[in-house]
Image (cartoon, rainbow over all chains, first blue to last red; front, side, top):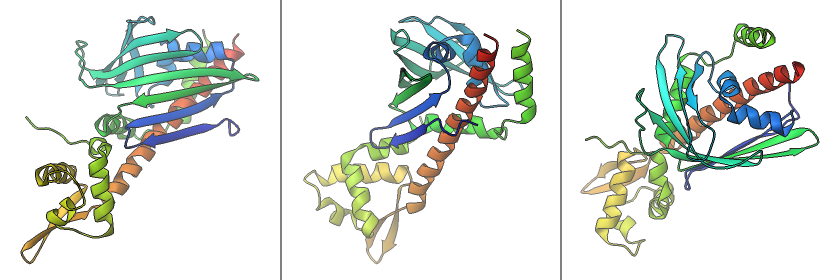
Length: 166
Length: 107
């Protein structure tokens, strides 16, 4: 439906760095909120039919988001994102690591940088992931594909209905 | 303690990338590989061990000599994995598109 919106994904394997760029048909402030507010993040970051559950999120430098990806059977995969730099509506950086349910991180994690810019009502988000390891990718992929990973029409309708009732 | 080798780690080192490039052309003995580098044999052996542990290269015995060869399928596997990772992002962003348009409608 958004064929005109660009999506780039490149990996510099030698530098262990992943570059992702995506455009969204929405104004910058809304897209910024979608990446920095737990209640919106939880609606889209989990690969369906997994769901995202944020235990707490303090979006400030030195603050954290502690959250879990939850499988349909209730299995939880916890992770910590710690914010290391924030320039509102422009840029933020975080350190990302898997964790146990008691918030003990599994190091090393990876460093993430997000950049936001808007042109003619289209917001571009550039994500750079430094020091990514194949191990971590493997875990994400396992999680994403274990359950089939395709988002069914039913799931989508459920989300839209829930949002409309707000 | 079991140390799991990471393929990104394997190819993050310039010497190891050079070794991969060398044996991609033809299988080579450790000595023949070491001749291409200024470092010690031990250093080259260590790189070969790491590459073996990552299953990027394998040994084969030919007469008295051991040859190292590149596992091309393992290299392809990396790209296959990355493509799956890319698809996860694509799906996430499609989900975000829906969320954004729903929020916009309700403003």
